[in-house]
Image (tube, rainbow, N blue to C red; front, side, top):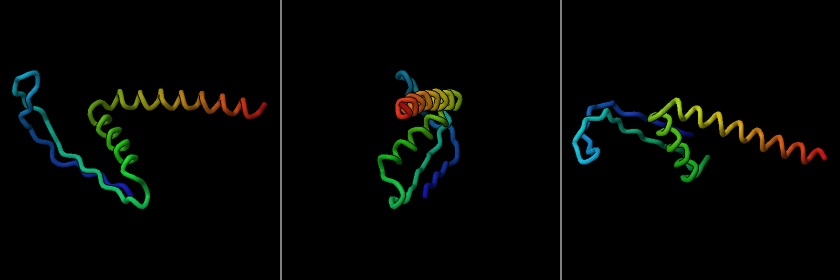
Amino acid sequence: MLMVTVGQVADTPVVENDKIVVHRVSNVTLSLDHRYTDGARAVVIYQRFVKFLNDPEKSIADDIVAAQEKHKEDSKFEKAAAK
């Protein structure tokens, strides 16, 4: 089981390039049942989730490219296995 909670978005002062600027920030919490997956996999899920929140279009495009590459590798494997 995986549970993700996202807190309220709030304007928060952040240091950026040695200047204080205001960013809209939210806390994200990931909780999982270790009977189903381990912490290493949870980190990957969390990183992909944060990447998606920060840049949804790039995240989706990266996933499409990765799926296409995996499909090419799978096709090569299937052709080699058929010989």
